[in-house]
Image (cartoon, rainbow, N blue to C red; front, side):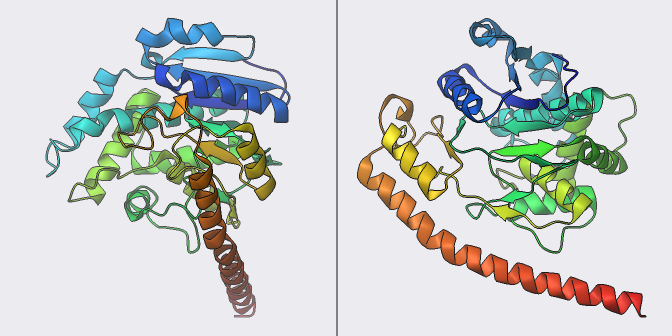
Length: 335
């Protein structure tokens, strides 16, 4: 699905059949806010026919095996972790790491081969408001106050060699990558582990598994995030501040009603994530029922109580960090 136009918004989603209702709704919502969309939906071979039902001119369905099969990924991952203390513990989580390999492999190859921007968008997430993903040749850096998992940053430090001086979590259920950002990311990943004759899927599998093994001595369930990797790489490249944007995810027990969606948009929430595959009371069967009213207002109220003071505090910190950097530059110039 190559396009000669550079103003297409290319979106990659890695999905399972259970995500189809959300994907369909999300495509409809994206079409309300953007023109010239290309969707690339990566799914298992056994579900390819089912996903082909939504195939249209600008929706391409891709077999995940064309990137790397789960079997080949597992062999690489487990070989690199065979001497870890959590060799057996991590195996039930392999499919979670596999989908991250698929996402990163697809987006870096697509951007390189087509010289076009692309975003990764979670299959369980629906856009609520228009997001400006890119500005000129770079991604707009966004952040969330809902997440901050230290294990992810330690793994990134192993890959990049250091961490930014000032950053928030990029775990927003989406990530964006421009051509310049892709070149920078690939350069750093190649420095960590040379691609050599590996396919991209094989290479990224090695990058993630070896970074985890070199970083973590004890098992921690989630030890890597594709969103934190790409987000941090983009921060390194331009050294610009992130913008905090609100989103709905935690503690939902059903799908938002139209009224709840409009309230969320008015308040400033940009997307909603339905974690319908999680084995808890709120998540089980949530796609077949409406979000309860009282819990909804509790979720929104609690977020605002947390968000507004945090935003003010973040802006103050950002201002002082800017002043410090400016002073350091002046000292360097006149040194």
